[in-house]
Length: 568
Image (cartoon, rainbow, N blue to C red; front, side, top):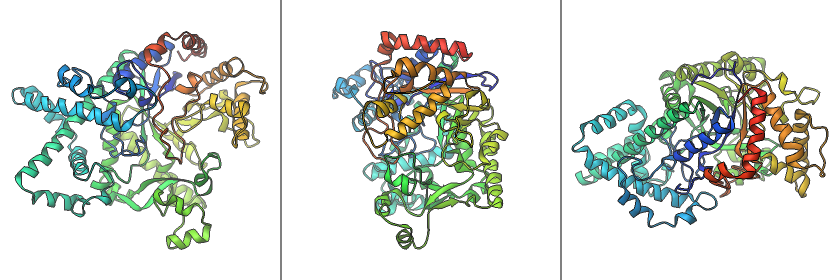
């Protein structure tokens, strides 16, 4: 698929875990994605945007993965014959121990879903091991994949096998002493009896098998999207988890004493820490000098992996390439620092304060250095991406040099209409947006429009004024004359705001699935550790979505708006 800003398109954002099907195993998977692609194409959308698909850790956050390269096994479609080595008998034996009706209900039950899918993959792997003895073609395909991906796969499977040796946790600083570094762990393994080494190597083999299946299924999903003339948009988080195979294997390429995040932000009023100190994501900073010395091979591998699966990808917090806000403590200590003042904080940190790294934007020379270095790193990513298009999430505290820099590199930035204002405070109309941009009312971190409406008009809350202010900005953008509690969301707000988004000059207009369906469900609340984060699912299956009278009526309206704006 060829994507060009010359042709405006529209897309829909949905987390894969949120998609429901009649036969899923408690979480959205690649069969659900195919059904979603069909549904989106029938409405007139040309793009489906997903969150990161890399393997997650204990918090289940797609933005805190334990590998920047490995794919999350829970995304796989597991059924008899998928993968080829999973038989009906094995499937029935494993699934028979679960109440699927209960597992499919409500939000994602991660612990049970992960256990179920792991058991199915173990069954498939056992069959594959037996099949290898008599099928040279299968051996060749698998070995070719392992050789091609060895630069990251070798260390990743070692890390995953070590996780199993240490109770399944990725927090390697809690592992046994002899496992806490690659050299120490490999030395430990060499000293073990033959049966221990063989068992360990068998587990490495299993994790290689899972990634082989994962990459094959995801590339098939991309091919299916091609058939439907729908582009898939992936997502690369700027940072990686402190507890990742990448950091464990390459500690010299990261600055582990600092924790990346974002500066204080008054917008997220439901998070006191974010308002006072900022967002502490816990990601280690990059040692760009060390990465440059290896020609950024780790970053190039990362981009190549995404390029194989997606037609376009978004870099989350692209501002981090220019400079990133750094904390001298990890998120586990946020509660300790929350009540402190500046002086008390400095006493706890030995005089080290949160700041922008590598340098603040307080001087012209610093701005120029940040811009120049950021462009160097992004040119590297563009080179590795080849023909795959990049989108940069440039939201938050944005230095004035960043957006012109992204435009010069051909990277589309984001336009959130309620945040795009003139110096006088007027909302910038969509007709004035740069073509090389992506516009949307909400990302996975934000409240859906229907939830904002409820907050502003249907009940009192601490954030009522903020919600009302955002709605008024959106109404101004959409040409809605006035808002009041007498207005009706569907009648007076949904259609004009959707039309205005599609009629903007932005190359891509993306609607979050909850906004498209006028739902209130929120996928993530930044700065919180709620069980509802990253677990909410659509309120009905794809089959029911396709047949629902109310949804079909709403989608006919959306189709007309897409066609009228030239995006269908």
